[in-house]
Image 1 (cartoon, rainbow, N blue to C red):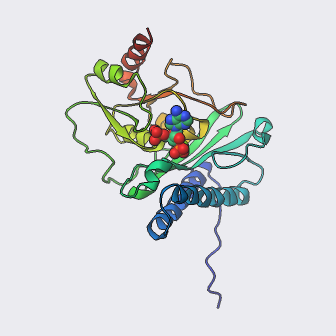
Image 2 (tube, rainbow, N blue to C red):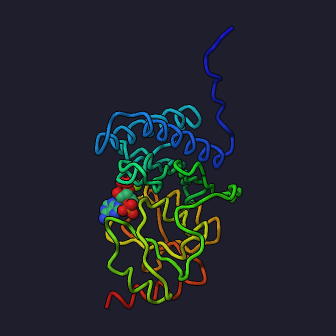
Image 3 (cartoon, rainbow, N blue to C red):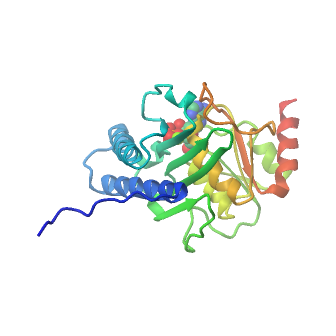
Length: 263
Ligand SMILES: Nc1ncnc2c1ncn2[C@@H]1O[C@H](COP(=O)(O)O)[C@@H](OP(=O)(O)O)[C@H]1O
Ligand SMILES: [Mg+2]
């Protein structure tokens, strides 16, 4: 009798695939973090590599004709003529992953299709054991990253590189600024309703926001550049330095505050 692990059967649904892959890479990262003698930058690098290898191998098996844009792989530019491109960030929030005790890190898997933009995505928050999907399949109620009850609406921002406009935006909605690591973790805090808005400016790449935006947009949240322009993916230059993800009814106020702060 064979004792080998059962073969993995790739799902036919793209969102199911995104979800399975983000979850599997997340489980690998949890195990690595718990069992590794490494720390600091070496732990982060090991996590980046292990998650990237798993995602690339499974994507090659499940969707051999699709292109991949990964934070952790050389961009061979085949994606620029491909009709389907997986945009992945194997470990978003590497800084927080390295600092044990932090739950604010994520795995991002998104699909971009020519003529349609982002069509599927999943964000795993492995430390919480949750994966969010762009088809809105509900996740079990669970403890989030922030207390559910807040006196004031929260604007979540990068802990290491908070945007200059954060205080202005928070003041405009009578809210407060809260630091949190990982673009995916911040976007999912808005999805869960723990935060009213996620605002970022000053630098980011397509893999940082693609899957979070696919999930957040599917929930009816506002997702644009900070000037209100659409977020575009699979561009020749993958630098996509700013974004707003917020409750739709706050978008006008948030964007006006950002415009005003520029003057
Ligand atoms: N100014 C900047 N330039 C480039 N990347 C940035 C950036 N600010 C944030 N990011 C990236 O966006 C992700 C979320 O950052 P933060 O936790 O600070 O909000 C991180 O991705 P990685 O962890 O995948 O590198 C981080 O590297
Ligand atoms: Mg990232």
